[in-house]
Image (cartoon, rainbow, N blue to C red; front, side, top):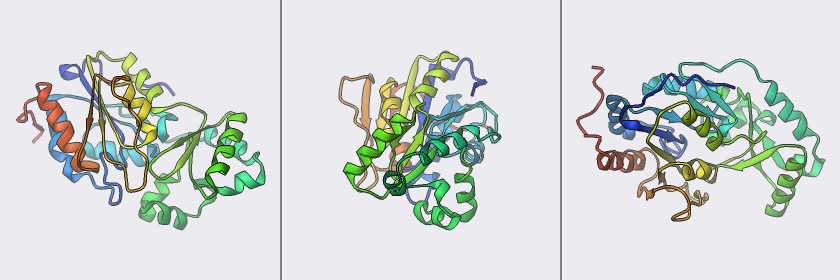
Amino acid sequence: MGANTGIRNPARGLIVFSDLDGTLLDHHSYAHAPALPTLERLRGAGIPLVLASSKTAAEMVPLRAELGFQHCPMICENGAGLIEAGGLGLSGDEEYHRLRLALDRLGADLRGAFEGFGDMTLARICDVTGLTEEAAERAAKRQFSEPGIWNGTEDGLQMFLAALDAVGLSARRGGRFVTLSFGKTKADQMSHILAQMQCDTVIALGDAPNDAEMLLAADYAIILPAAKGAAEPEIPEGSGPTRILRAQQPGPDGWNKTLGALLTQLGVAEEEGDQRG
């Protein structure tokens, strides 16, 4: 899906790419209120914020509008989809149906251990995500990928991943789910967006292994603490980013404090807040 970013000359040459769950949004409540001061600084300074999440377009479009970054593109479904600036991206699910057909061709032992959103009732999606029924309905509107829960053994998971690869599917581990797609990543879409924009400095924030490639492609990588028991992205020192920063607090509190401090270091004054009134 092509993207018309709507942004050609980001203010100060800065651009921010941010994961949502566990990063900009609280892992449990999905709230973002603690991040409001730094969100206002970004808006006031004209610095674009590109949301990059495993969430669907149906989930992300209202959030992008609420945050005030409709003029920015966004990366949805773990990089499987790219929604243009101001676009809704809510039509067409042919890719999702192809994915489900390929998944169902796997052996019953492997297929049966993977519980995708397409296998769940709305009540079950609410249960595993903590979402309200309305929010779960938006999460179920898949277009490009299939998140799910692996209920088998670790050895079985490795067999499952190999079987997926054989039918052209890729799997990414996030904070809670294993997400299946046809292979595009957050980093792939990030590269597509940057190719259309003039940016001197790229900042990326994430908390899970599926954010690693996006973080590696940035100049500054901010790693948020993962949820209890979950893996964090592996970003070895000297492997990519100019600088790696590790937030001390999880979710929007750590997002606000660590990104805010970096903006100050990069010359974005704190008084450059939201001037929309």
